[in-house]
Amino acid sequence: ALIVDVRGNAGGHISELVVEKLTRRILGWDLTRNAQAVSYASNAPRGPVVALADEATSSDGDMITAAFRLLKLGPVVGQRTWGGVVGMTGRHRLGDGTVITVPMNAAWFDTYGWSVENHGVEPDVEALRTPLDWAEGRYAVLDDAVRLALDLLAAHPAATPPSYETAPNLRRPPLPPRQ
Image (cartoon, rainbow, N blue to C red; front, side, top):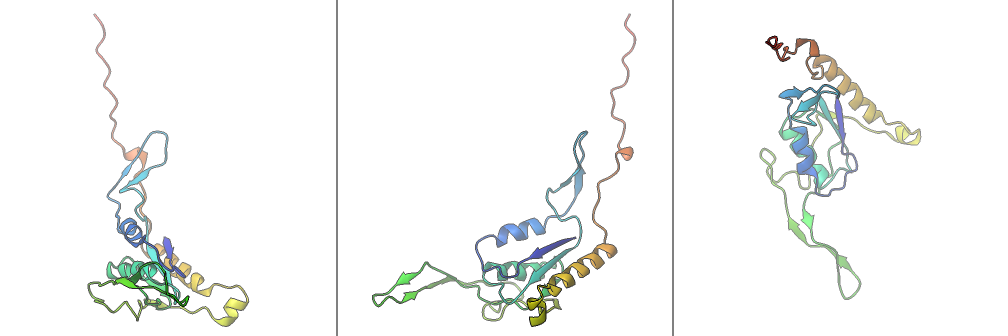
């Protein structure tokens, strides 16, 4: 199982790469003589995937979480994301020293429309980190995600390569004797 932790992800420009990797499916295996089998497509998730998000997940983190839910890649555990997706220019300083940013782009999704902005993405499984968890250094939300991932893994085992014993014999046939 794989847990994609986007808690506190304040953005960037990697959501398309993350989503592309997570949507890969194993179609087969590349087995070599001296190395570990590699899935085809490479780096495809081998088992269930769970996302972990919180109220500090924003911008590109919101995008990953929204795409994760839309594509039904697995459950999202945690809190509703922040809901700040609008991209902006760099910082501009005014004559009085005030710094401003200017919104430049916004995100629209099938199903969500414009609603991720100012609302965020709801989790499938709500899990809180309480003040006591925080004070004692516990991550109950992560524990919930791990438990869910293990339950999903038990119900849907990870993909495994075939055994070498089932490979066909492709040895060259013996040559006829010389005359």
